[in-house]
Length: 242
Image 1 (cartoon, helix red, strand yellow):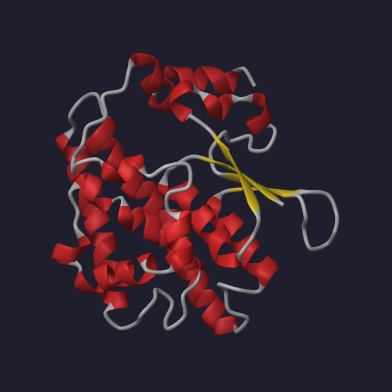
Image 2 (tube, rainbow, N blue to C red):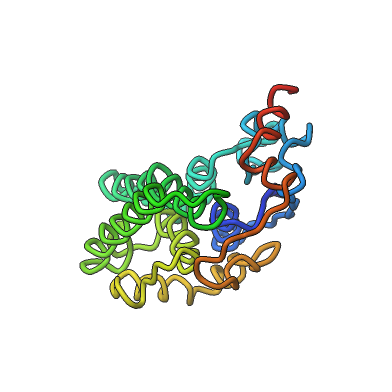
């Protein structure tokens, strides 16, 4: 059994989609980061960086103690290697897949995350920051568009953990008024191809899918405590206490 400590975000849905693709039995342990669940001692014991998701594999292939993994790139590689699926055994193809996975964890997630922050959460409108991170988001989409105009999937002809990693972030783009169907047709075709997979349909809304039903450029009016837990002083105070 796998225990998935998670939240309904693109990063959380990467892992639930992968688990569904691989047919793993798993238990969802939900967290509400708006009230500071990420600082619970039991989570910090699993991930000192107090970020979600975190996966605990209670039945690892070596039969030993449970394996605890944080950081979604590491979780995806672990699951793919455990099952011998969604990652190639061929050296060259494996690293094509790995480089696109790294593209997501090093570029797409961090920089698009900043775009979402400055469009949807920042208390003070900052034109320069919005423009910078939205432009970088569009640049990343163009990188994917160039690749996907030549291939069905990011690393070539085979669906892999690289596609699983990127897909939930592309799904969230309308919230910052970036639209694949309008501006990136090859990427949109890939998006639809992945969305049609039954495992993606099952895994994409684990906990709930509310965030994706919001209108574009939706500014989330957070109360002071919630904002502080996510972006302000409270998160740093909590970490200093651990």
